[in-house]
Length: 95
Image 1 (cartoon, rainbow, N blue to C red):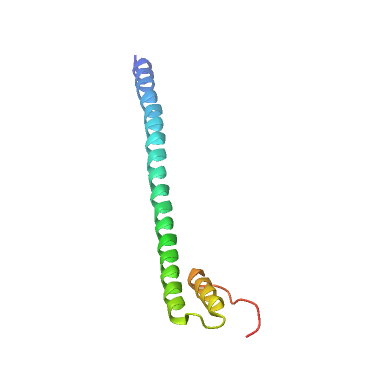
Image 2 (image 1 turned 90 degrees about the horizontal axis):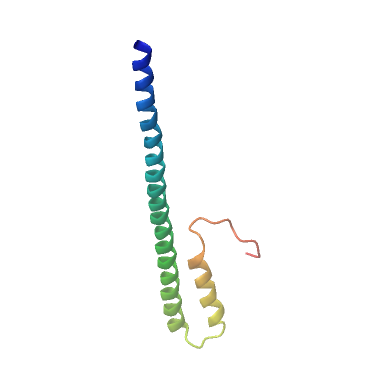
C-alpha cells in the first residue's frame, strides 16, 4: 500500500516538473530577447548621438574656416576625432 502511494505521488509530481521546465524555457526566451533588444537600442542611440555631435562640430568648424586653404582637411580631421572611441590607442604617424 505504501509503495502504491509513493508511485502515484511520483507520477503526479513528475509531470508538473516537466511542465515547469517548459514554462521556464518559454519565459526565459522571451525575457532574454527583451534584454538584448534593449541593449541593441541603447547601442543605436549612442551611435546616433555620436554621429549627430560629429556633424554639428564639423559644420561649426566649416563655417569658421570658410574658404581657407586646407579647410576640408581640418573638417575631416575633426570628424575623425569625434568619431573615434573615447579611449583609443595612439595612431601611428609623424608627430
